[in-house]
Length: 253
Length: 253
Image (cartoon, rainbow over all chains, first blue to last red):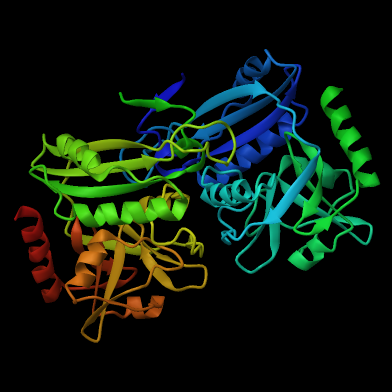
């Protein structure tokens, strides 16, 4: 059992960030983008950023026993006395854990979560450790038997799935909501955006329910299709198969 | 050094709650109210609540070495595998830490924080572990040399101070904002409300800046007066002295 000190600020305040990466044979294809987001998160939270090469060596060592691994890097603000103010200078530290990538169903049964995402531009986009909204949403998913919950912001706009970004195919174009006010700027989402095949656009629940196809993408699983949402069912989409193959190629190159 | 397992959900997601209590000679005058809020938080987050008598014995034992102690009880959702969904059933656990109550200045120099509190009714009122907004606010306080930062919600309404509830005396009446949309329902605030000397009412920044007196109250320090906010200075308020004495009497009875 690995242990950390009980005065860690990640434990008391969620003061830190994380990245969840996919490794294949000890290498993460999207490593640089994960690091860019992590460093951006450090700037936003006022935390020193990790030394990238040391972090890479440790993560690669952790992933080495597995052909396909999920590696979680938790970047905590470090230990400190009681109180919201950090010690100066803060001494952040990394916690790295690897596991074999478990198989997951390709099609996702989803539902709408009743818990909404709060609008907070100061924390939007980054992958910080304050995740109670997602925890509450995951409880709803467990209770309803969904693999993913779809989440709206306080104004009713569609933001994301509980553990990935949501993309909707509308009139032949794949769209995903912006994440400036809430949500996470996913690395899988970035990969799809940079291929030029995904566009940022606000989405309403009605648009999502009437979409020609829906997909959830995250950096561990890649693009996966939503096959059920409420009473709606979708047949397997031709466009997503090509994208899923490109995702596989990226990781196994 | 006390240690916990690195797969604790409080560490990864802020999945849990806390209470910070004042003890005098091994006894917390407002113990029952702290437990009521903790149990309410458990219901709201879907967590099993602690056995109150066992928790009390452990907290009292921790406080015993000190005449006046601050005891922090952290109620974590417990260990679990990767992912937002909790193991079923969750196995929460308590982490209890005590320290001598350090002296603090009676008058508070405060300022307005630029970081806003997100509106999130699902988490409002309870003392959960997702505290990055307060961490960001505390950074602003450190940089500006304030003892407390005053925080607004996303709509501009006044909510609270970074580490306590804010009360403003306006036309002879002490007012404090409601906490149904964001903020924490403080135990010190409750004590003041139940004395009948404090009324819940929305407050604007302008009202706060023009108040006859301002105070911050929390369950560790009791009521303390704000003596400076921006260019504004307040003389010591007569009403607060009586309240501060009642607070002392409560704890030393």
